[in-house]
Each structure stands twice: as C-alpha cells, then as structure tokens.
Image (cartoon, rainbow, N blue to C red; front, side, top):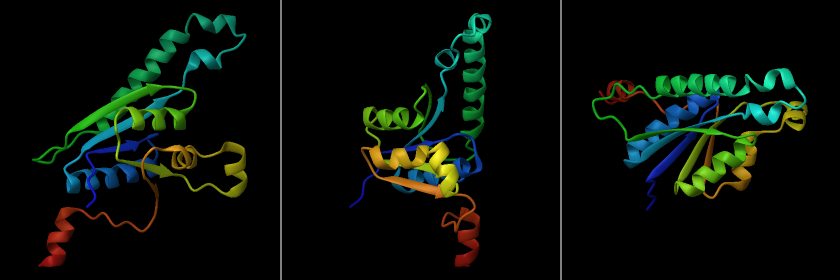
Length: 165
C-alpha cells in the first residue's frame, strides 16, 4: 500500500510548474496528504560582486523579490474547494534551487516531490542544466516530473461525473 502524507510541489511559476501543481493537488486529495508548495528565490547578495554602488540597495531588492514571490505563492494556493487541502507555503532563499528543494524534502519528511520540467533541447540542457534533473538524481524520495503540454491524466471532477453519466 502506498501512503503519501506529505507531497511537495516545487514551483518557479512557469506553465510546467502550474501543471505540476494540478498533479500535486490531485494526488494530495487522493491520499489525504499535506501539500507543500515551495519556491526558491535566488540570493541577490551573493550575485553582487564588486558593485559597491548597489550593495546598499541589495537588502531592499531582496525583500521586494521575496514579497513578490510570497504573493505569487498565495495566488497559487487559493483553493475554492469546499474541502480545502492542508497546505504549507514555503519560500526559501538559495543560489542552488535543486539542493534547497532536496534539503527541504528531507527535513519535512516529504513522501513525493512533483515538479515541472521545461523539456529543453540537448544544447540548452548542457548550457543551463536542469533543476528537475538534479532533484531527480538527489531526492530522498520519488519524484514525478511534469511537462506542459503533455498527455494529462488529471481531469476536473465535473468531467469525471459527466463521463460516468
């Protein structure tokens, strides 16, 4: 028997991440799990080297970026279902998003990570790398990667009811 008490959806607010959230919500409902929705914000202070003129404004800029990410997370987590899911909004600051996701998964006893993947070509993958791939390789639990658009197996409850009628 599979038990999933904690499901983590890692989001970068892209379309693949939105698709991953749909899957994560459906799985959390099916398994009566807590849904953790995590976004990793880059650390500006480590990105600013030798830019003395900008150092004073880095903390304010970092705070603005984090506040904006919190608002985006809040917007993602609006749930109009009469039986809302238990949800934990998580915002982390790190220069290594894959490591931050994996570390959180271990600390929070996550049973499944759901993440979107952009499905870039080989050259872009070599140059940029893939957060999803690093998560898959290092995660302490199973990882479901979701591409968008893709064959989707999550359908709204209304369509299921119509199909059964």
